[in-house]
Image 1: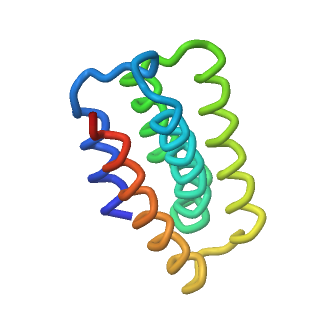
Image 2: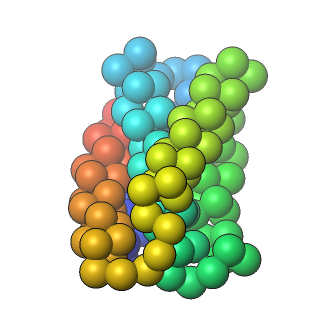
Amino acid sequence: MKWLAAAALVLATAGSALAQDRTPAQRQTLTDLAYALGQSHALRQACVGAADQYWRERMGQLLQTETPDEAFERGLRESFNTGYAAAQAQFSACDARSQAEAAQVARHGASLAEAAGKP
């Protein structure tokens, strides 16, 4: 999960590319990243507890950085929530399987964040 955190930080501090300036492909990458953040949120909560908001806060930072239009923001939020629900349904307990999934999601999210951070 450390990879995804680093990648999300890179995205949050990378240039001031606003969502309105993003190409359709870049918007899709951000949507996919929001899904990965949602998955990460559910997987982390399975191990740390429901009160943990680490990845939800990172999603908030993504929205603040991108300043998306209303429709795109809604889509990003829906993608986050869908990723959360999918991971929560599949991984309700903290075990080796959920931790392996968290590592896989982190690697995928890191590559998405890197792609989204490129102009």
